[in-house]
Image (cartoon, rainbow, N blue to C red; front, side, top):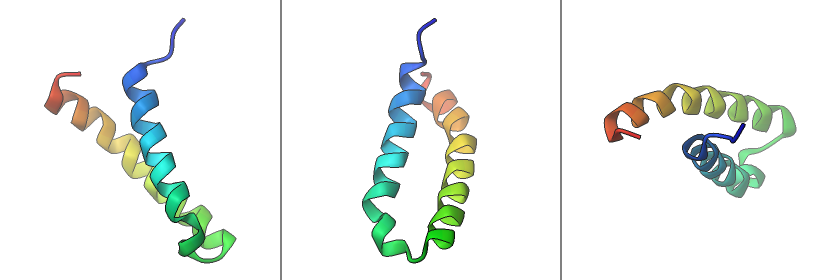
Length: 55
């Protein structure tokens, strides 16, 4: 079974952007909290973006 390329690209971009800013986000617990929030928001936004773009 192949992975969903849209999901892979979307989460890859989100993780890449988060990693780029990680050193600026403070302590490890704060980075973990921000990462969790970003992950939740990304998981909520992906279906909305897919339906809006027809992907």
